[in-house]
Image (cartoon, rainbow, N blue to C red; front, side):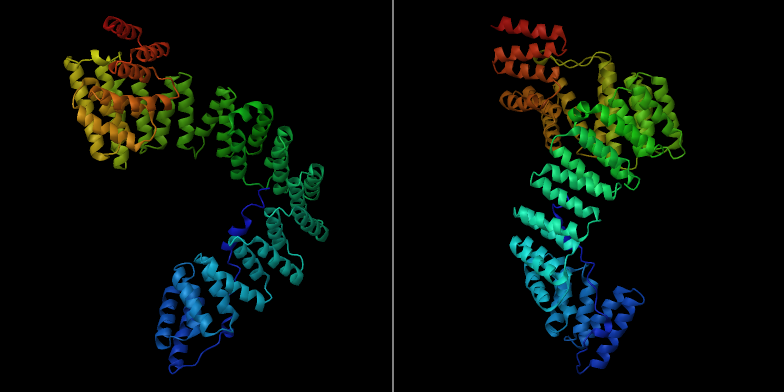
Length: 592
């Protein structure tokens, strides 16, 4: 029953309905300088209403008040100009205008409006109570009811709406407010009576039947609720709110087939904005289990949506992602490739093609579409970065560095440049370790003595230094820098500072926590390392063999041999190097 929720408080901000007083209705208070004051006031009115120059009008009204501070019309006009620019000043001027001329209802009305805009709801209450007593204006009743409800006096709000109805007759908007308050206070029978009265009064308005159905639904009178929703659709089958209400009704009762059927009819409506259709469909597929269990109907909805809007990029992307989820990757690829041929093709279309082609292991196609994207967007740093990534994956290190340096040439901010320098550093690290990753052997680890490796690691660190100069809080670089230093067992205090900063910048990242723990382990602070490593293990959802190995090494250093062996064997099960694990187990056995 989403239409009932939150309607009251939000209505406070729909205050544009206040009508300013006609200028001839303003009471001019005579003063010793009344002619000069009146002239300035009149000029201010001209500037404001004829020329729309609120700045000069404000200056003229201020000058008028300098001539006579009790000139209420100038206070009133200033309050109107300042209402949404400076609520406190608007309140002050509106209050003075109202106090200076207590008989002027326009002044009091603006004062109440200014108090609401300034969120001084408690002060606004007595103002609108007075307005309700002295004027026949349904909008005052509406606002007073909202203020009562905000003040946690829903029964007073209901009473004031009853009074409005007795004076002005049935009003759909006030009736909806009252019905919402009655439901909130569990007065279901009264709410039902209100909804029935509205249907009897205006039987051919579908929204009245929707409201009646929502009350029936809350009261668990299911057949009557469904009947009311169906009646609304009988009156107007293109009423989106009726289909939404019917769909909600079925969803709350667990009838997913009927719910999806209502959603299908909703998404077929021509008048429903495409953005809203996309939002609704994304909501449908957000829960993967629901998506899987109801795939046949959702597939029909997705296909219909695409057939209805074949030229909309958002719908095409949505449908392509649906195809990917369905395992129809090649069909999705065809759609994305069609998008890249459009005159207004976006980078996202090219990125989608490259991502799928990478997954399908079609490197030539990836390069082809990357080059096409660069022809369209020659100054896009992200595309050059992607070129660097492609070369890195294929171990084309020199070409990867070239791609990243091209990205540096067009990068437009230091944060991005920092990220790219980090990528260049990663390439040099990869060049240093070669095909075999630098395996951490815990207590067995030593620094590399190979000159080529040392040279490339020096270049790696130099790139990381450049990255941190541009952006000191680049968490990825901080983490990698700290970890590689720990593997070489050098500059460990500096490594610890960087690891601590990386974990502080990115909460609950198991990889960063692992680095932090490992540096502490290298420093001999194994109790602290164990505490942090335990957190990393608990957060890791990938069963990382590296994390399990590290935890085992830390436990072994603390003499917890049994648990160390358990985690080493877990690392082995998850793909860690068998020889490394056997070496650890052998040393553990010999130590016994």
